[in-house]
Image (cartoon, rainbow, N blue to C red):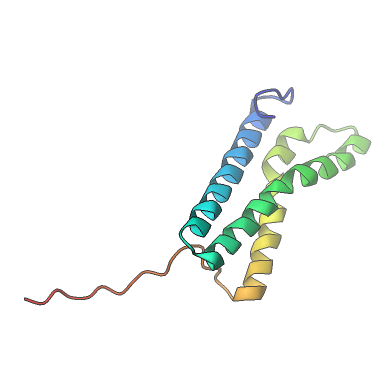
Length: 114
């Protein structure tokens, strides 16, 4: 979608950013499950799912400006994922508490004995 858009360079950059973010969250989720980190995988796959739904959010959000005769494509290309990610993070925080841990907690350093 980023390479074939007729909405201009701003929209193309937004679509490329969305695709890159979606791919990154999906790869992190698969890496986590590959290491047996089920809880971490679950968090990242929820974010990946929210980004997947960005395509639907984009198309629905384009219906309103269509009736107002205003071109919102460059704006919605960047903002369509934000609401989905906020809802996903709110859902995760409701389930697991705030802040949502998206990485392994740091291990305490043990002082080396001489």
